Structure formats: structure tokens, C-alpha cells
Length: 258
Image (cartoon, helix red, strand yellow):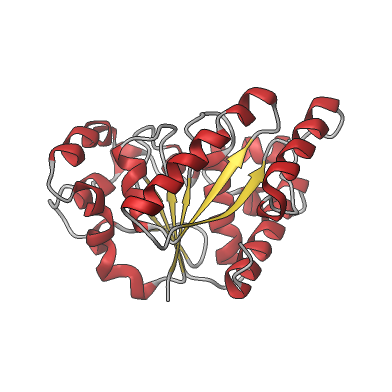
């Protein structure tokens, strides 16, 4: 059965899209069939995999609005086993469409049904807001990963996000679970980082991934080359960390440890 994971955090700049791209590539590297869906109108996940918006007609927008089929909007990437359903600038207008549509919370889930059988993992990169697009991701997903930067202001919003996710569980998707909280852009030189990690682990316990993603220039450079860090610099600390997170994800899903 396909595992569908949403990457959500209403705060921007926490490494959400970077995590979605690099975890997708890492899962593909361990021989999983992966589809990454870019639900952010900024299209950074698409750009990070080498796709310039103006060069392709495919978009998740057409899938959400029923104008085209999911299977007709999937692109192959340079990473074997990793496919992309790209974003589009017009996706910014999808919020109103989804809110005004009967059953609008389930449009993505229903539209993706025909492609579920072709993938081991479908990853949903959500926009940095808790709106209709993020709600569609959470009604589609089995699990959520919450990337968070270990800083005081980043941690403040996590409790509210968790409450929102619990609300989706109760009202729209009883099977939704928080797979894990992932510390990103981690710099152990700063006492604030270590304090934030301690607070997070104290609050969320084993829900926090054992692996942390270090602040790493090679991870930051990779999107400008249109490839994941794993294929930009395999030996870099960031790329290796994402591989370890992929292993943790697989283990948690297999053992139900979340």
C-alpha cells in the first residue's frame, strides 16, 4: 500500500521544501518508487528538481480543478525512481476554488486515486500556511512530517500546528498520524540550538527524529543546480543526514513506531 506523507509547517524558512526534495531523493535511492507533489504556488520543489515553470504544461492545479488527470501531469526527474507533479503560479488561486467546492477538502485525494498503485511513497510539499491546499494534503496523507528549525520563534508555532493536525484527524481524516518532527538547519555551535532541541525532545519525545539535518552549504547550493543534495554532493553531511532520515521513515512505517 502506498504511504502518503505531507510536509507541513505554517512557518516559512524551516527547510520544508528542502526536506521534501531530499527525502524523496533518498527514498528513491533505496529503490522506492516515489512521487513528489509540489502544492506551493512558489514552485520551489519543482525548481529544486530542475523544472522551469514555463517549459512544461503539467501542473497539480489542473488535477485539483478536474481539468486534467493525475497521470497526465507527472514528470520524470533526473533521479531514477523519483517523479514530480509540478506546481504552477495559478495554484495561488486554488484556495478559493477548493473552499467554494462541495467536498473541496478531498479533491486531491480523489484525483490521485488512479496513481496510488504505482508508487511506494507519495510526498506532498505543502505551502507555508494552513489553508485549503494544506488541508487537501492532510486529508490525502497517512502521515505528516513537521520540519522545524531549532529556534525559539520556530518552536512557538509547533503546538498550534499540532492542534490543527489533530483537528483534521477528528473531522476529515481519522487515519492521519504525525510520523515525526524533524530538526533542520541544525548548528550545534549555538547554545540556543541545543536548548531548542532539548525543549522539543522533552515535549514530543520519540516523535522527534533521532537524526538532525545540519546547516550545510552543499544542501543550500543543490537547488540552484536543479538536483537534490544527494546527487550534488553525496558525501556532504546534509545529504548523508537525509539518507539516515529516510531509513528512519521506513523503519517507523514498518514498525508503526509513531
